[in-house]
Structures are given as structure tokens and as C-alpha cells.
Picture 1 (cartoon, rainbow, N blue to C red):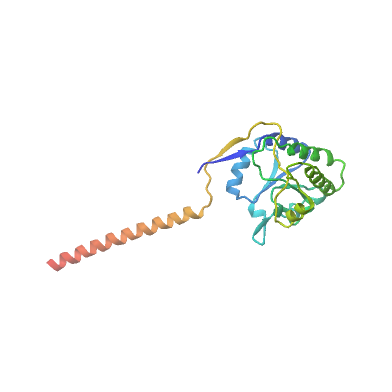
Picture 2: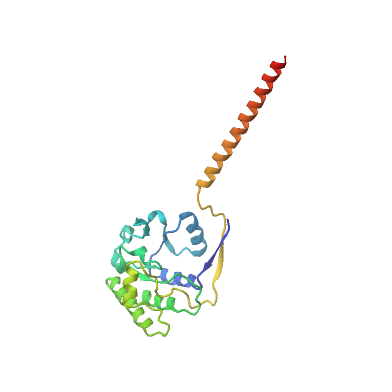
Amino acid sequence: MTFYVVKRPGVDQFLQKLAEKYELVVFTAGMREYATLVLDRLDIKRVISHRLYRDSCKEVNGRYVKDLSGLGRDLRRVVIVDDNPNSYVLQPENGVPVRPFVEDVEDRELGRLLEFFEGEEPRCEDIRDAVKQFVGSISDDDDDDDNGGGIGEDDELEMRNGKSTNVPVLTTINSPRPCFISLHDYFASRKPVVLECWIKMIILGSLVLIIINVILCFRIGMLTLL
């Protein structure tokens, strides 16, 4: 199958800038077979240090959770950016929430997020304190907007409880349009292939048995006539 994935505009510059100061790790709940194809085309310059897939997640109440304690890193120096608050429910103080990408080319949240990473990291002993201030500043700024699309205290509480994803958008500011990358040779699962082989073997075996029965019946008929 061939898939076309919308590439967030400016994501190349964003990753490259962060890679100059941070260790970048992609932690996705997606299947390895699919996510690998996306990352191979997204990370052309190989700035991503590690890739973690669904098999590295913990399943909690039927949801895939990304447990940061298993990374082997000091959690005072770890930030996870995710559009699903349930993903970092075990370490909510490390999480910076963002909305799923919706092709909003007018949004400037990526620039503000990049300023956070570039400005706070050298000055903050525990980056979780900076995350708390940053998420709070986003809430305050959005409360002043006429559209009311920001995170209030109630929204943040609901988000922590897994009831809402009404959070700022992570998009880009340096590219007018999103672009598309194509993914080829994606096999969602090996099980259908194995099942197909068994079906073919059963059909072939049935045909052989039918042919043998026809031959035996023919011979028996010939002997009866004789």
C-alpha cells in the first residue's frame, strides 16, 4: 500500500534547531512498521537520536502510555511534547501539550515553543519548573484571545484527567504550506500474509484430494464394468 502523510511545515528547521542543544527522541504509540517509514523520510539529516515505538509503551486501562522513567535519563532534564495528555499521564509535570496538526499555517506556537527550549534549558536546574511556567503562560495568553481557544484551569484539569485535548497548536511559522511525503511498501501486519498461505495450502490440498477421489472412482467404475 502507498500512504501520503502531511508533513508539518517547517518541521525540518524545528528539529535541526533542537538537535543543536538537545538529544531528540521520538516516542510514538504507532506501529514500528509504519512509523519507521515516516521517520526515515522526516529525519533526512538524522538528527533524531533514538526511536521508540508501540512496543516500548505501557498499556494502562487500554491506553498506550509513554513511561519516561524507562528512558534512563534524568527526568529533571526531560520534556515530552505530545498532543495526547494520556501519553504522559505518569509524568504530567514533564509534558508540554499541543494540538494535533490541522494545517493551520497562521499559527505561531512553534516559534514560542522553540524560544522556550532555547531560552530555559541553560538557566533552569529542573526543567519541569520551566515547563510549568511555560504551560501557565500559554494559558494566560490564550485567555486574552477573543476566540477562547486557550487552556484555562478547568481545561488543564480536564486534560490531565484525559477528558480534553483543547491545547495550543504545534505548527510552524516559516513555511506557507504543508507538503506531502509518500510511504511505500507498508504492510500493516504479517498475520494476513500467513493466513493467506494457509488458505492456499488448504485449497491446494482439497483439490489434490478431489483429484485422487475422482481417479479412484473412475478405476472402481472400470473394474465394475469389467
